[in-house]
Image (tube, rainbow, N blue to C red):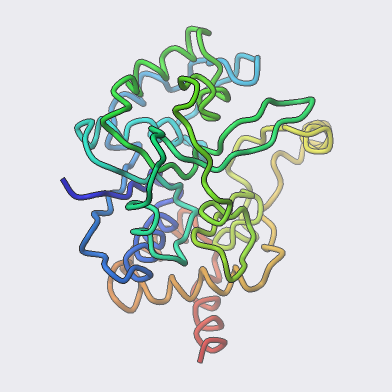
Length: 294
């Protein structure tokens, strides 16, 4: 079985997923050595029975919405099953773009671990945990991952969704740390292998659009902001411009490559702009990025 990279997404993030797919292939010296598969929430009927129900998240019962920007995240744990619990796979979010050769990750020594992900330090608010937005998996060792049953447990209050995403239920010693450059959070350096535009409010392809995600306050500052927007009736606000112009140019240069090679059809892009999933001036941004690269 060939190694595979999975990009999980929903309809709101399909353009990002297609650009991510292109980046994986175009930045690899040997793209024939791995498959790329896109997992869409709409291809999994199980999501229909979760819609509108309350689940446990950060100790609170909150409403699950299939149209939330990040409703695809339970599919992180569907990958081993999709692989038939055999072989190696990498999972990435649809807002993660390869700058290095993904084969270096797929073929690395895992040191006996079943999963590798970026380690996140703990503090007084949270324990040491892992960012499951990028995972390298030895699928044969993850037969206990049954994503539908595990997701259902969060609705029964048996498992906290945040703990699940942070890989806290995994057996001791089964998760090992990836170097940060394999999941670089909104930081672009010469060492970056996978660039993650993780801050939802500044994703480059959404600048200026009304925010279409459910705010989750994890700091006092963010919780205060959520409270203030509710008090003033301003909702979740709007997407802002990414603070790093180089990351914006990079995304639109890659989007231009996708339009040139046909991996994204212009009609599809126009539809996504009309649906409010991509910023209205996307083609102008593509043109500016192309001029800057010339």
